[in-house]
Length: 271
Image 1 (cartoon, rainbow, N blue to C red):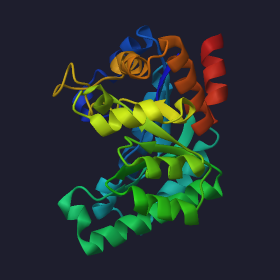
Image 2 (spheres, rainbow, N blue to C red; image 1 turned 90 degrees about the vertical axis):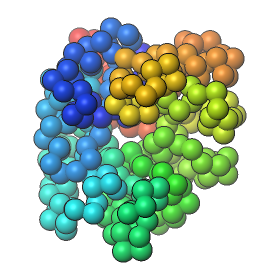
Image 3 (cartoon, helix red, strand yellow; image 1 turned 30 degrees about the horizontal axis):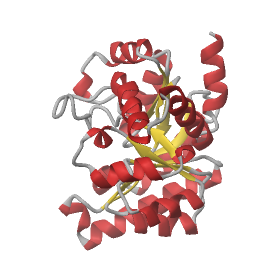
């Protein structure tokens, strides 16, 4: 099966269609969609949506874009929510967390410092509960690497990876997988395509980041997890591999990155 390792299925862009979108993705062969939270206000929403969809799981975290309005109380709430979620078989990771040094407001010194503080505290939560992390690394690969070397979670994914080969290898050496999605489908995305071809296949997972990061054939329209198989086919074409091999390899990489998926997928396939 295909696994979408990063999809904001609860986003307002989907309106009331989230479950229908998940159903269409299932019909297209997407056996699992991982829905990351972005702040404490949607912790309950992603958990509920994952429970209602037949092919979804979720992660809990505070996205760097939401850090400006986040407080210490949010971190305490997150820790309690993560501990409680361990009893939920659909809970698979801490995320989306990380650093964003692309948005100008987030690059101001005080906000960079706050981002790093929240990232480190969330890494500690993941480490304390032996959980992988789904990491936002936009223009911040080296800084993210610095922090995960100091506070080591149980692996995870560098989401929407677009760094150098050296940075990619550093993440791989630390036990992380690298997320590739719609950006790979653009012919002008030369560096991303080179990475997709040259990195070890077992280190690559697929994602849509829907409703964002739409692939070339629908850009700038709304992205959807139902497009993941076509994104996987593009990876197979770029690497000149059989599609089945890419599907199996990226599924195994996703399970390696998020081991709690293993029991969930076993239950799903037996249902």
